[in-house]
Image (cartoon, rainbow, N blue to C red; front, side, top):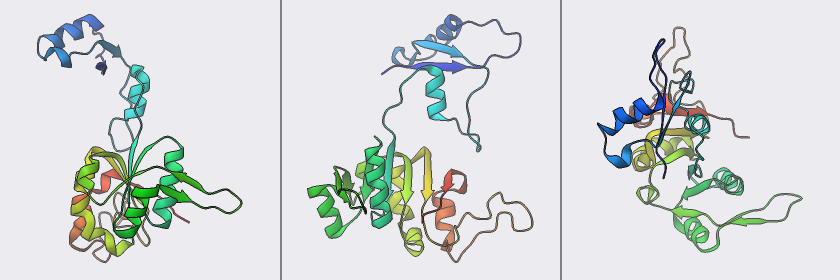
Length: 212
């Protein structure tokens, strides 16, 4: 594992890489001191202000590990996405239960497409999110009414930089977040009773999508 650091200097600063490493070594344990420091004009951030991990890794010259993606609800849509993401090299896990879970654990996940040979990929499948740990992305492919009761169960999958991809039917619970106008911030109790998703996920970490 390599520790690297990035810094944006204020105008007129004459600090060099060695000065920053010296500063860090006086205040941090040896294993936390960056082996190198890269000076940047700006820190790459997304629209919500979060640091972009991939963009930062590129600027630091580091190689990102496999992206961890968990699909919660491995039905037709979730299963299809699971195979495609696994083929693309992502570290994919799926949360399921019952006979479907047992079949994936025993034989992998098989995709059958028209005009193509069946494809089977090995995947990590579990009914225990805690065993899977924090993810980069959690893709929810449950029916809308099934999501609020499952929010608490999903918490072990969610870290400070986790993005929630909501591939769920109907009007999304976060629809009015930062929309502007008279309905700005309106919460939809019909799809998110008790603000379970608003409080359990938070609208700022959600990435919308269209499934068809």
